[in-house]
Image (cartoon, rainbow, N blue to C red; front, side, top):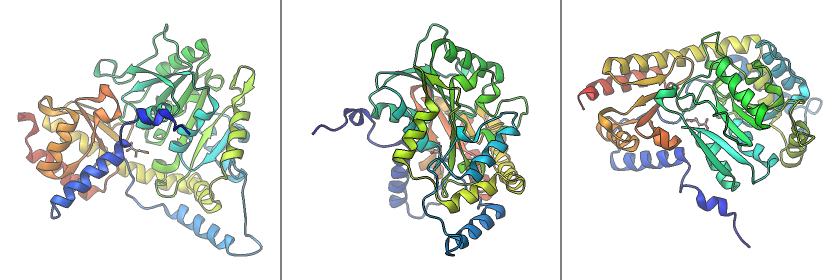
Length: 396
Ligand code: MLT
């Protein structure tokens, strides 16, 4: 027996597990400290009334013989896939129900999709990046090329024409930097992928936070994308489903490589390895995408975006450079006084019991940067900003 050597190339812990461990240790040593976390991007507002009512009704249905359901279709119930198609139609994107696959969230699918691709494919990852892209490819033993995001390219790197890769990740709005690719920029990614025969893995988990109507909320708003892109989306942040678990992946019928339909392969993979998302959760997801649910989602998103505005204005006041926060729930700031990401993490934790995410955890280009999430409760967030002001960071 040999274990998968890819696992030996991983860092000891997943980024957010490592941060959790550090915070628990600090709490153990300072039990009286009131720690505020603006670290992991986890929602704090409760589920919307529309979602709760739908899930209660679905639970009651499961308790009656006439309406009880056993296994559902692995790729999701038709009612939810149709609701997702209607959601895309509002963005001007026509999808077939067979192109939509319901899952327990974008994170799982972003890892699982790699089953479709040969281990010797090369993967391009613009970084700083959501650590799942790197870790899952390391597990699979795949060769990774990094594309550097930096202040000079607005943390929105574009693919060099001469660069070859078989797979490439995109995340817009970006986690961790909060930046969003414009239509023209996404078009250059699509054109590059079409020229190279590459497949784009487009993570759109934060699309619902885009406020600027000129910015694209789906890769399929870009001509040619259905021939080269798979899109991953989630209700985690859109509808507060981080604890409920429901997302969806779109694999267009037009996406064919080596004469094989990737849609067909993904269906084959899912029907073999996945038994679908619970009926109750899928009814909740359907409600989240209904007109009433969408209006309620918008209220929660507006709350989080107001949090982002409050963080941004505190950072402006303190004279710290940052990006994001206008069309995304993340703010990406430069650490003050030339501190490294982990130095600033320790500094904030020790000096004011505030937790954020060190930028270097998202890749080497994140060194010297730091991420705050806007998903906190307002009163906590205001307290956190007050603590930052007290630190007089600009004089460091
Ligand atoms: C994050 O903080 O980056 C996210 O919450 C992680 C996730 O969505 O899995």
